[in-house]
Image (cartoon, rainbow, N blue to C red; front, side, top):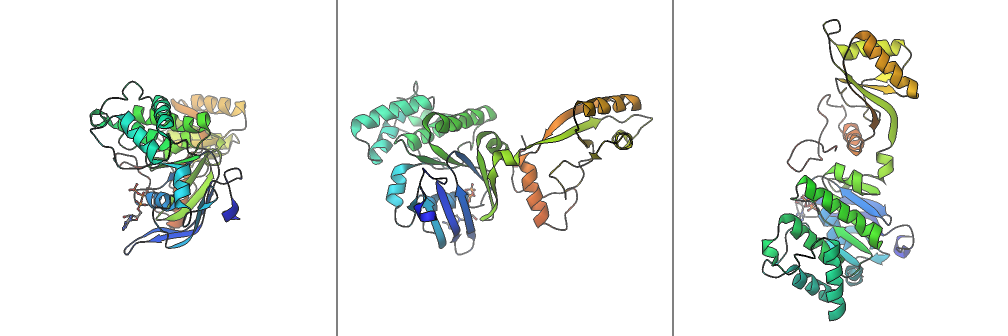
Length: 351
Ligand SMILES: Nc1ncnc2c1ncn2[C@@H]1O[C@H](COP(=O)(O)OP(=O)(O)OP(=O)(O)O)[C@@H](O)[C@H]1O
């Protein structure tokens, strides 16, 4: 039962039919999820309801209906206890520019109830963990975006919580900064055993960092599964070839030749049914080493150039596109909807 769930059991967060309605928008729509210990990604486009969910889970905003429990505690009654046991890294910049990282994090530790000596010790440890030890006495106003994000992470960890909510921790970071932050987040769990709920609208990030991914869209649950399930290695080879004068459509020539040789060939990736064919890629079901040899020999026999041949992983983004395609019937061939954007507003992040 949700109300009796604890961190020692299988879930750290349980919501049942949780809704949050504002006058003009439904931010959460009957959301029911169970989240286990570990690192969990909460993914959704801007406005999907991620920050709203975090505020409700912290007991900072009331839900319109439904129930939510965090570490076995009821968000409507036990908000104070939840905030003692849970760390929170907010999305937006909230740091005072004219104090040092040490002063700020000690202050936050004291706010969380740590006595002065413990607060100073924990602050030093935490700033070391996030890589800010050398800079800890400089005013935060002179910090880079990456350093500010790490101060926000440090203040979320300083009181040694059982669980942390990290709201878009990689926002505003360049690729190297994102990788560093994701590594830190992973270590929050592996080094300290703290469970993490991390939000992002960048799918590739979560694939690399999380044990489990929860996807929401328009406040509704789209999918909740382990990252392994999302990214199963499929026994499929993606093959791309050049065209030649003899074979103006090299891809089709190869498809026909491989099919004639008995190989299972499609122009669609496993898991992307319902979407338009990707055009230049063939997907060959790999029966073993001999499939590589068959493809290589057939390409050579046709006189085509082999651009690439690689084992294909089932990417998280495809799973979402499937869900989109299923919802958007009839499928709009060639133009799958793309609610999950890259940071620069581009299309899917399938890194
Ligand atoms: N206080 C509020 N009053 C009215 N509408 C709100 C309020 N807070 C959030 N919303 C709306 O609820 C929806 C969900 O917002 P929320 O901030 O939870 O999304 P999000 O997934 O965190 O996106 P982002 O990453 O852009 O913050 C949005 O349409 C937003 O405009």
